[in-house]
Amino acid sequence: MWAAAEARAIGWGGVSRVARATGMARNTIASGLRELTRRGRPLPWEREGVRRPGGGRKRLTDHQPELLARLEALIEPTVRGDPQSALRWTTLSSVAAR
Image (cartoon, rainbow, N blue to C red):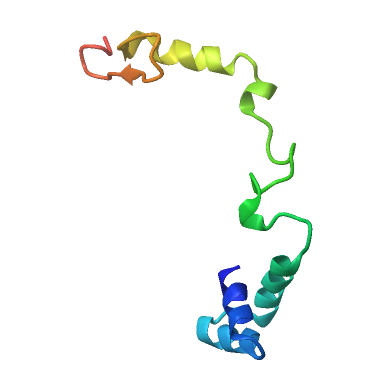
């Protein structure tokens, strides 16, 4: 997107000049120019996320609902600090491991 913005600012021949200066492919810069000139759609940096809603990998807890409870049980003997706090401290010393 930056290279496309620079090419647009240069004007005629900007894509070729930016491609030579950066080592980027001309079609990559041209693709960026097309994204810059789209109308009525948000630009990539204005979107909330990279993927469409619902895209991407599902959470592990969706597939294995008991996972979080099992992980908590693993670290419970070594947890220190306030249980209501979001910050959890764990210790692993020779005394705690016995």
